[in-house]
Length: 286
Image 1 (spheres, one colour):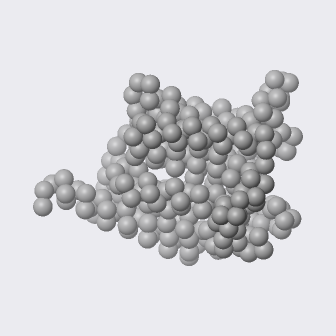
Image 2: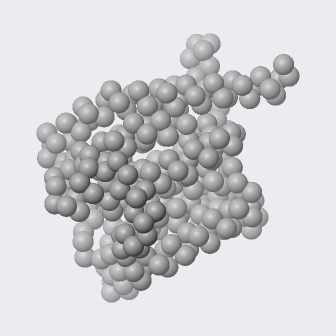
Image 3: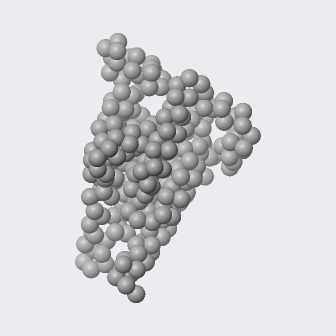
C-alpha cells in the first residue's frame, strides 16, 4: 500500500471512529444535559407553547469538538496530530459562531426579526444582539476564508459561511428541521472525504443521536446550535466543493434569505406536500 493510500485509510477509520464515538457520547450524556438545563430553569416555550430545555446546541459543539480532538490523537503518548490551518480555522469559526449564538440566546430580545428588523434598529441607534451576531459572524467567516482560500474566492467563501449560519437560524423554527438539514447536507460532504469529512464526522454522529430528542420536543438547539451547525456546513462546503458549486450554493442561500425577508418559510414548507412530509417526519405532534 502506498503512503497516500495508507493515510487515506487511516483518515477513513478515524472519521468512522469519531462518528461512532460522538453518537454514543450523545446517546449517553444528552439526557443528563437536558435534565441539568431543566434543573437550572433553562427552558423556553416552543412554537406550540411547550416548555423545552435549551440551548441544546452547546452540548453538540462541546461533544463534537472533544471527540474530534480525541480521535485526532496519535496513539504514541497521545500527541494530537496537526489538523492543518484550514481545519483549525474551521473549528475556530464554528466555536466563535456558537459563542455569538449563545450571546443572542441569553441576551437577545424580541424587538426585531430578520436582517431588515435588526438593521432598522441599528439605523435608529440601537445595537441589538442580532446585529452583534451577524457582524461578528461575518468577521469570523472572513477570517476563515482568508485562511482557506485565495483571491476572489475569499468573498464567496465569506458569504457562504456567514449566510449558511444564518440560514440555519431561519430553519430552526420547528423541532428537528435544522438538524435534518445538517444531516442532509453533511453526509454528502463528509462522503467526499478530505479535511471536511474529518471535521463533519463527529458533528454528524452527535446530531444524529440528538435528533430524536429534538423531534420529541425535549430540547432545542437555540441560536448556539443553529449558528454552529450552519457555520460547520458552510465552512465544510468551502473545503470540499469546487468554486463553481460554491457559487451555485451561495446563490441558493441568497434566494433563501430574500424569500425569508418577505414571506414565511413555515408556510412555504406547509404548502408543499413533499417538503411538509420531510419536515414532519418523526416529529411528535407536528
